Image (cartoon, rainbow, N blue to C red; front, side):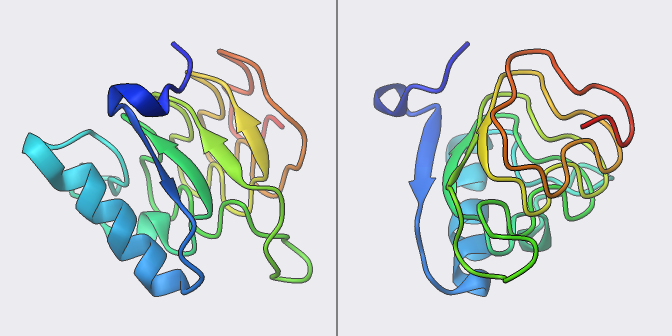
Length: 133
């Protein structure tokens, strides 16, 4: 269940421009019938969900309004921080991983503001309530 870039389950997004990063994420998530990532609250692919994304994005990650906006960015300064690794099926919910830095294990950061602004690594199936981490 870990992110393996060689399996086409994940992609690295390191684009400097926030809007381009969101567009790049959406293009990858939409490719080949869809990978279930960067989806808004009604399940439509939406660049706003992944605007400013910096790091590694995997299948089924970043679902919900602005779920991964500015992930990998320092919440205070707005500068690039530690890249996020949004593992499969992580970061679900309103602003769940907004400005989140570091590793997010599979099935983690589920809920409104679940890991918003957090900089520490999160293991699998953790932080599964609103505002939990």
